[in-house]
Image (cartoon, rainbow, N blue to C red; front, side, top):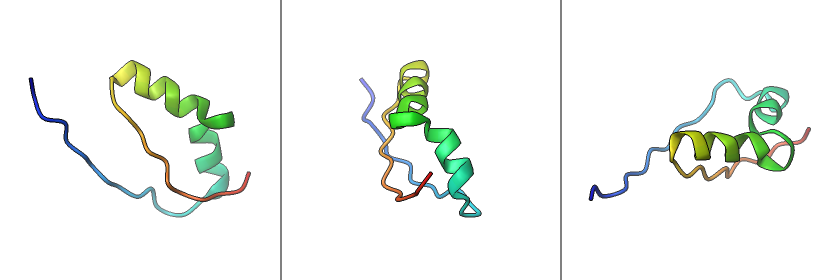
Length: 49
């Protein structure tokens, strides 16, 4: 079994509306990405919709 790896990255430029669309309501879009790709996403950004 392979060891899990962590990859940190920042989406630039800061655009709260685009970030809100990416993560979806209640982070629903992020959960879908996790399920499809078999990854874990930790959203630590603060944004307002």
